[in-house]
Length: 123
Image (cartoon, rainbow, N blue to C red):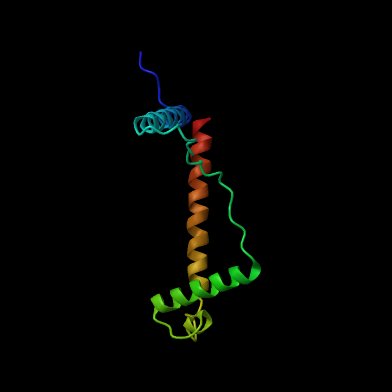
């Protein structure tokens, strides 16, 4: 009977294999030290990332923001700041005519009438 592999199960398996790998690497380092005639040195194992984010100062964040804006401006082909890259006049907003509004309202009323009729027939 095969077991179903879930993400949690796979993550636990990965963690277990990583721990085994670190133990084996430690033992290999000890044996290599003995082979060379040295006492086994304390081995440092790479630490897993903790997921904490680095904190940047306000000035650094501002510099990073300006650099990113400059990169985007370069990609978009603008020579100045990001505000200059905006078009001078945006497209005018499209409006629905009164006739169009009436046609949509009539169609919606027909749909609801059909739905009510179907519900009445289903009872």
